[in-house]
Image 1 (spheres, rainbow, N blue to C red):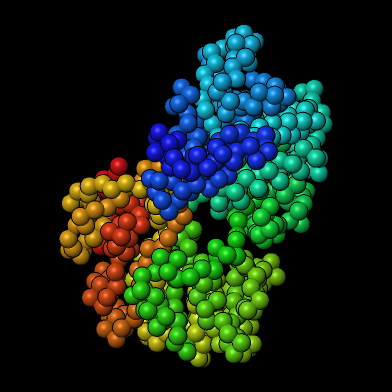
Image 2 (image 1 turned 180 degrees about the horizontal axis):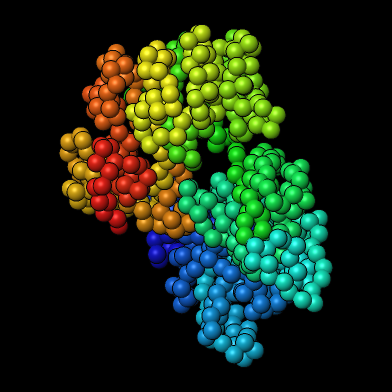
Length: 579
């Protein structure tokens, strides 16, 4: 380490002099990482064990491998050797092909197992160096999970209790998995813990005929996590439905449910569940809600100083309607909850009508829509008007009746916040006109509209400077003309971001405030393009221009903006250059 400029000679000498006082059986690299020495290359950071492993691997003649569970077939690698054998030599199989087995080790000079294993498996053995902590942790996790799935599958004896669309009948099989079987309980617990650790926002359980898929959505992108026998997944779904008090027997119609649980770190997490009957059984999606993520500061959400000022001006009006628009998963709920949290005060009565209630908040009076008993959005708003509200939040305006009630609430002196599914801010006005709202009612009540999208933010540890061609820059800035930034950044990938190049997401915003000119245009029946152009003249920045600002600030990449945000003008056929 001293020779490679990773450690000062004085620090090394001091450590060598006191090393006899260290009584531990830990791996040497773990001991070195525990010293929390500063990295001379980046003095503000400590030397983590990953950096030490990456540095040490070439010195022992092995390539370094960061173990990524997303890329490992648990069932296949655990068949290579027993858990006892792997634990004895502290090795972990990570990939199996027809010709070789890749085995991770943190003991590069212990090699007696290599020839023995090659003779038994009749395959080539390729060693790689890995983090000893990862090997210890994944040894337990991989084998326990494989053991649970194998045990569950053996207990089921190959029979699935699902309703198969293709009516595939297998003879001579009996047995049925119990949702409370210890193997199923362990698999479900592992699934949740793993999703929490990886920062997933959604968990997808997707049944297929024989082998079903488990996928996580992380930063808006779906990742394949594992493949599980369909019979086992069916039992997992039943287990989760039991915990959420859903009807376990009913598998022919969609159901919704909720589960509140606590992570190993003590954080309270809420899961919102949705089941859907599919060709090979029930598809289950669990959306993960963390209260600390759902309610955030506006600067963390991606609001610029100008955006914050304009949004604050809109939401401080005593009455009127403020709309948040965008597709599903664009962060509308987070924006609304963060706004409500800011507006909520002891002297303010904040009431919401939601479907479903995303997060239970003591500061709000929340109503859950229940269509089965006739409690829809319009009925909920009508009821709230008799509850002396100051601020009314309508989860979504879906029809004429709900829009009429929101307008009535605004006209009678209430501030109404709601969402709408449109591509951009000006389209919200035309959408309301299309469902039958009179123009004079819109001009009397609508205060402003904000459209939004979410883009992944670049990993600060590995982002790399890159050049930008004029064509790509013009695509994100039109109809504005602005100088191309001298330096932009692109995603590369490192251990900190799990090789994706991105960590977290932030919002792009398009904010249209209803000015007197816009109100006159709505009353005279101006078309969408005219409304959009007037919005630009009044200071509205398109979503892509908001993205361009974040590209110039080094917060995201231009590829992300081109993929996520729609074109700024009405010309929707501009080709997007990818890569």
